[in-house]
Length: 318
Ligand SMILES: NC(=O)c1ccc[n+]([C@@H]2O[C@H](COP(=O)([O-])OP(=O)(O)OC[C@H]3O[C@@H](n4cnc5c(N)ncnc54)[C@H](O)[C@@H]3O)[C@@H](O)[C@H]2O)c1
Image 1 (cartoon, protein in one colour):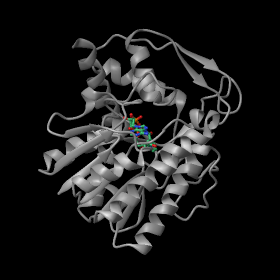
Image 2 (image 1 turned 45 degrees about the vertical axis):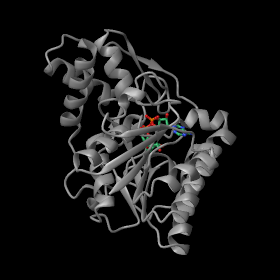
Image 3 (image 1 turned 90 degrees about the horizontal axis):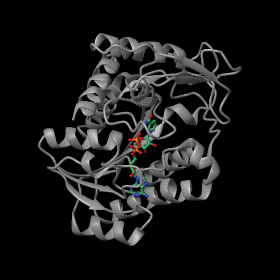
């Protein structure tokens, strides 16, 4: 297949591109490098620097290269930025997605896989529940609104055109290549800081000093598997959760990362400070994993963290 991976210079998209290439597909990556890095793009992929807000450029590329499928990972990914700049968020996430869908149906693309968010669109998930695919959506941020809007557009295009769409609602994804410099990606941030013997802080869930927010951490390998299974037809549902189904507080996560670093042979002792609640943070988000997404049990946090720590250590030694 000829596959377009948008956002393929980013964390998840670059792993997805790797996986498609390993299966023998032809891969074209588009990315505007706003947060992604050129070196993340696999050398066997063709790279086109392109902003998905540029409708003409998107249409040109899709017209000149007849793609069979699109794995759409490019996005403005920060909840905080979406709150500060909701218009820009919607321009990239909503209009950018419509540009791709329009070009897709004009050029005979058969399948679009979309990276959505299970971590944000349900809002607060009360104890002891896990959000299921039937849980009502309560987006609390412009980012969550824009992802949900995209899902609606995908449904509309799948209804009106011979286009298959698959929505992958990711929980909190972690793993090698995640950017430790942003404001999200707590696993990458903590790993980097602990390796440098720098203190880390747990932002409060309710009050300073508590164990922090509750999240569902899913390993990037599981998310990649879901992207592949969507395109090979092993995911038959239009929407699935890519999640672990396990709840982890920020404090426990910090302790697990410290343990993974120690197991890897590094002498680290975490200094865990506290910080106030961050405005806009969902307190608790846990998803019921959809078995079809990976066709197997999700990667255990310990195994995923071991692989992540190994990558960060290798990179530090380069
Ligand atoms: N990481 C997570 O925990 C998580 C959770 C839920 C959903 N997602 C979704 O998964 C996808 C990938 O996220 P990620 O964590 O790899 O983030 P990332 O920032 O590493 O990757 C996003 C990529 O999109 C590119 N991009 C941004 N705006 C663009 C534009 N206008 N035109 C072209 N390219 C553009 C960036 O340069 C970057 O390479 C995103 O759609 C994100 O919303 C991620």
